[in-house]
Length: 270
Image (spheres, helix red, strand yellow):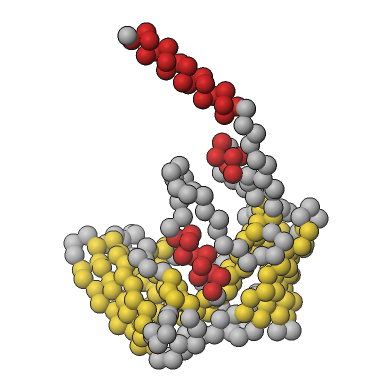
């Protein structure tokens, strides 16, 4: 009986293998993928653009490396409101840096243009969101031995935008880079007469050499495209073998990626 079961197992294994080998895998076109995020704060030196080649689905799943090949020979500009910002490729970071500080004005329209000899032109036009305006903020906290729970409520007097994002950063005076803190709800879409943004987060009580730790709340008006992209990316898990294939939103004509703009304020809460 065991021999029969063993034979059946081998037949099943090799039978399936022959079927898979005889099925032609679909060819996926390699495209240019760009991502650029620009705000009025530039808190973490975000004024740069990544430009890479996409990977076919089957190549990504079987590749030993998750790195994407950068495109190094493109001409990149952001134009609008009478300004023209040019970018140059920085090999050390594998991204494009601006030749001058990018200062985008709320309410003005800007166009990102990427010209690549291999992939041609990519383009996206977005409007810099209007500022947050007047607001009232309420912050409650509960302190325990190991962590502090914060509950934040922001009431907007007269919302000038429909889409928003909340971020939280913790930073020590001796640390150069800000440390992000997880927020349970980052992206918001106000409907009808809604005016309130609410979120909560937890800070784990730890010290770095006894330095004082500051907590910063960043509230931003964002574009609709960036809202859709952020909401989907927040729940996206490419490593889940049982998940449905997900196509991330793109607002770049001629390729893939996102040109994201936001206008925010920084509030120090401790």
